[in-house]
Image 1: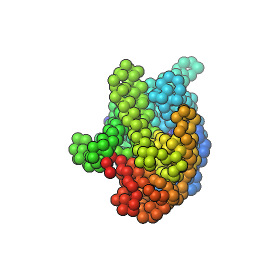
Image 2: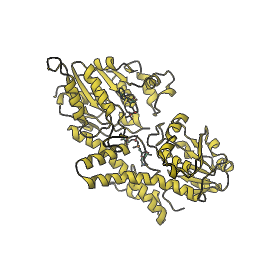
Image 3: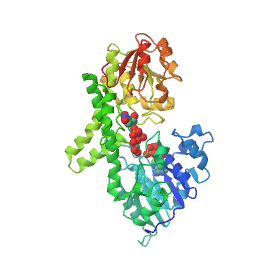
Length: 473
Ligand code: UDX
Ligand code: ADP
């Protein structure tokens, strides 16, 4: 049997959507391991420590229960970076890696400044042998950068090594909204690395609740690339279906029927085939653009163009939907009240990163609409941050300026509105009281369902005009 280190103390750098839930589940499954989740953002740490579990910085079904059970038992949220790294046998890197906004690779490559800063902190404070685990999704070969920083920064005065590091890649496959279940019952756990001792030590943690055969080990670069490709494949399926939805609308086919027919082929499978307003979330676009950057870097232009098309179709989908809304409403939404149902990038999360709602709302605002936005979990402040991007729109493209407000209830959003536009597939939108909503709306009223989840027959029976994504009604 391969030797391994029994991990007693973990530090996770980054208390975000990945670090928080991942460490909560490890803490739950391994009560004997002490875990410190550190973050430079003091507000975020305070929110993780708040007595009221509704105040946790991220909303994730089931997370509050795990936090209640483990917090201050073997799971701690703190800003004490130095102390937490010093005492750790294993450090997880879960910091943000957004797309670079300027410089080389701007718009495509990941900005690794937070990863680099964390690696330098680990190099400075770690003691003895530390296993460093890449958790954030990173461009291929980031592990080499981390290794280099770690090795070069830990030479002592006599140029000898006073500490030792092993770097592993352990990409996260959790999806927001189902994070706890994904972590507790993963399809697979991927561990990339060369140091067998370190790999076995990490395997031994996951092995406490994941079947051994589901824990796949491979070289570092394969692990890093597999994560990017898994996300690219998923995004590609969605862009394919969004392209087919447009084709359905033109030909009289129905996207739900096509989805059922192709999903029944066991080689294709029935998951991730839902057409919608375009994929959002922090990973898909970023990961594909990383692949595009990487492919161009290695002179593989055709490969780069192939993947880039997935992102182009996604952007096109958002604009296509905005245009349809404007066209159906007699070619103008200026001064019209439109209720937007759902602002998060998918249901069961308060995350709005890359949400299609942002682009669609901005398009409608440019056209002068008065938007009233309802989302059960997204805060006013978040919507405000997302929609205040007008300075990015060239002045000559602004037709007229609309306005937006946030509603506390669906009824409040619907009152006097010309249209209800469903952008996120929250369960509560599936069974709306169309009789009531219709009586509140201005006539002629419209329902635009970009997720195909509403009881549109009832809406139609109550005199509302219907537009459903991917059908020709
Ligand atoms: C994704 C990956 O699923 C996960 O494995 C990885 O670790 C992180 O990125 P996430 O972004 O949280 O997870 O959500 P996901 O469920 O993948 O949805 C992404 C976007 O695709 C959402 O906007 C969602 O609405 C959209 N989507 C998803 C569709 O439009 N149709 C589908 O069939 C599925
Ligand atoms: P993800 O979805 O990948 O988890 P988030 O943005 O939600 O991304 O979380 C990343 C977290 O990492 C943020 O809360 C950020 O403050 C934190 N972070 C970034 N750099 C550092 C650092 N050097 N030390 C500690 N925390 C950091």
